[in-house]
Image (tube, rainbow, N blue to C red; front, side, top):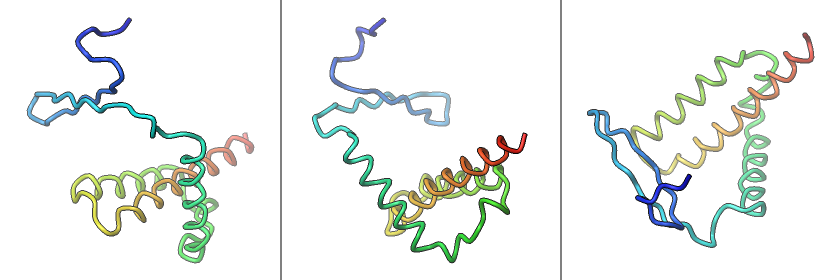
Length: 114
């Protein structure tokens, strides 16, 4: 099932250029891949971030619908995509992760009510 045109030990990302053409980016894999420890570090930082901004978020899980939360994620990610990385990028990404958590919580509450 392997594609012989791609060298081993690399991952590949196909990027649509918007003009009908695609670019293939080859990304070498290394031993610094995402593992459970690094993943938990990121998630724990997001937890701290949401707790520190709890006043700002309020009880949006109970008030805002899933479509609005997804829209907020799209808005944040689009901003990063268009503007590139800057001083606020980490906050924007953490907001996005937390909005996804809120959307999952909202979804679970809706499923329990059925």
